[in-house]
Every structure is written in C-alpha cells, then in structure tokens.
Image (cartoon, rainbow, N blue to C red; front, side, top):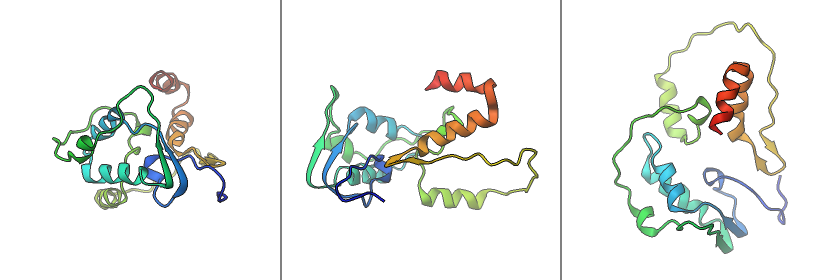
Length: 160
C-alpha cells in the first residue's frame, strides 16, 4: 500500500481514485490520443473520460510534461464523432490493452467454453507489480514467450 508521501506511477486507465497533491502527466499529447482513438471499436466517450480523469488527479498542481509534441487540445478531446474502425492485425498481448469491464462482461456471455485437460500443468509465477510500478502490460508478452517458446520470441522482440 502506498504511503502518503510516496509517488505512484500508473497508466491513464488505472489512475481513478489515485489523487495526490501533485500530478505529473506524461504523453497527454495529440499523438497518444490518436493512438488510443484509432484502436478498433474504441468508445470515444469512455476514452475522453479516461483522459479527463488522468488530467484531474492533482489536488494542488497538475504538471503536463511537454516533450516536443503538441499537448492534447480541447478540440480533440471534445470531438467524439469518429468513424468506427474494424479490427486490424494485432499481437495477442495487445488485444487487452484497452478493455472496459462492461464490454468484457458482454463478450464473455457470447463465449461457449469446453474444459480440456492441459498437458503441462505447472504454474507460471508472474509478479504483476514491482513496488509501485504496474507490470501488468508485460504479462501478456511474458505468457506468449513462455507458451510459444523461441519460435515466436524473436518475432515478439522485433515488434517491441
């Protein structure tokens, strides 16, 4: 559990409820907005809320770090009408980068399952956090590498 005087490093999606006196926000840029907005079947209202929540975590000060790119404009943040894109080719580990509880629950209702007995039953122990750093974005890549071994590992490394 974080102490009152400790820094918290998190993603935009996980920032809800993490108010601090000072918030330093990286990647609040037009290019990151476009990256997120161009994800298949992106709900623009939810995306806008995620960005607004992330930008409101500082109780006293909010610092937007500008690293040579234009910061996200109010115009971009307000434009919610975009054509919905269909899925493109993506790695398995990236398929869950932008999920929402409501969508996941609805999808699970559409899935029919069949229990199979796995050949390899050993547990893959994975730490999803190191101190206050969330490692969950790395878990999918780690699982792919463990499951698919060296054949796919080189392809994964080329994509990172």
